[in-house]
Length: 198
View 1 (cartoon, helix red, strand yellow):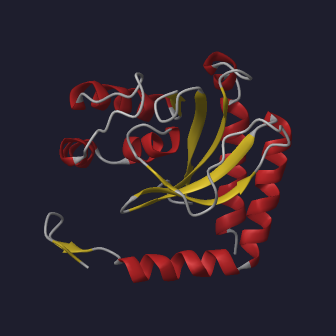
View 2 (cartoon, rainbow, N blue to C red; view 1 turned 30 degrees about the vertical axis):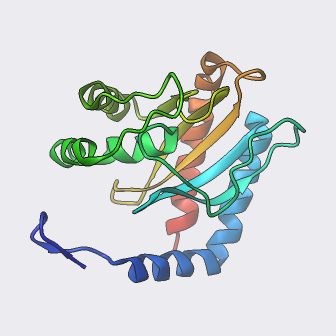
C-alpha cells in the first residue's frame, strides 16, 4: 500500500496476513507455543502472543491459566492500543515523531476509570515505557484486570510482537505482576531465537 505520510510503501493487509500465515504454519508456531507454555507455568496466569494490526492488537497465540476464575480473550481478539499493556509496548517502540502523530489521531476511549485519555499524559507514559522496556495495564481496559507486557524484537532490534500475561486483580496485584518482568523479558529473548532461527 502507498503510505503518503512516509512517502513510500508499506505492507498491505493481504501481505501482512500472508506473512502471519507463513509464521503460523511453520514449525516455529509449535516451538513458540511451547515457549508460551513454559512462561504460563512460571507466572501461573494466562499468557499471550500479541501483534499489531490496523484495528488494534491481535491475540495470535495464548496459553490459558488453570484457574477457574479467568478473563477470556480468545485468539483472534483485537484489543485497543492505548489501554492494554501489549498495545502500549507497540506504541512505545515507534520513533517519537510517529508515536506523537499516532497518539494525536487515535480515539483514546475511556474503558475504565483508570484509562488514560489525555494525549500528552499518554505520551509521557509511552516515553517511560520506551525507557524501562515494559508496560503495565492497571485495570485500564477491564475493571479488575491487570497485565504486563514486553516487546519481542527481531534480530535487528525492531519490534515484531509483544508477550504478555494478564490476571484478575483479586488474585495478583499490579506490584506483584511487575515482579514478573524479568521472566517475561527472558521469554521475549527466547521467542526471538525461536521465531527467527534459521
